[in-house]
Image (cartoon, rainbow, N blue to C red):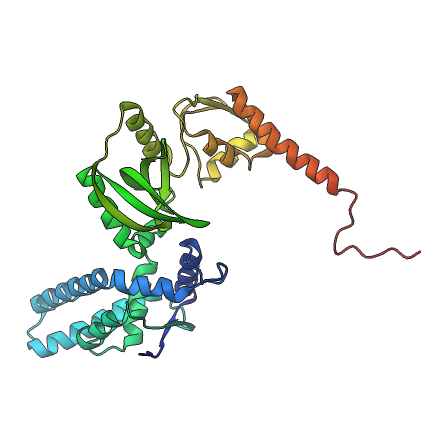
Length: 345
């Protein structure tokens, strides 16, 4: 059966978040390049409808209780008044700065989403249109931090992983990262980055304590095999939970000392994305016990405003990074730019 698209008008901010999540959570069409926004919206509708419905129910109950205390009003009139107030509250929440609902988002019902949509049409509208209902739902979703939105979209995988962690059981995962692969993992914990960007499963797989991004886990099968960790593995996982779950940690990694210029210290204060947590600061010397890959990724943006004092191997890696970039730029210096005009003879 072919279903008609549902046209939903939202603010530019909400439309931007939906588009951003489609890319960030890697919803692509078969060509691997074109974004598949309807796939994201389908997951949103299916996975968020119960939570959104419950939030609306709680709002209405609160309004009814409050109005009853202030005025004598019949139940039918009370219900109608509270729905009118809740519609206004939802509209303000969707456009807090009085933005226009002028961006069109089209939802194409699928076999997965159609039963949810049918239920909403039958029981949940209470005077508002289907388009308005989804506008309010999308606005509620967009108000969540990114990692919480990710948890909504990948609700099925997340709940299965939480169950496995609680039961201390291994899992069999299907994972997408460039290409689809499968692996057996002993799951230790589910967590999110400090910047509230992505959720991660911390687990032991292929002889490594590694993070797996939630949005790249396609399916989860809980196995009837206990997940057991050594003290060294537990210590490493706790380190990942403290300093950042998105980086690979090695048991042998030493503490890192980084010397910053005055401008470097200012950069460190302002550049918070993936910023490592120092365990000690001695004047302009910052000491870290985090992942070495995190140090490299973060301080590569500092240029001459950061210098790795130790360990020497990490300092050499940073040196090679800048040296390779320098050689590449040197090789390009004599080449004309694409926009350079030809000189007259």
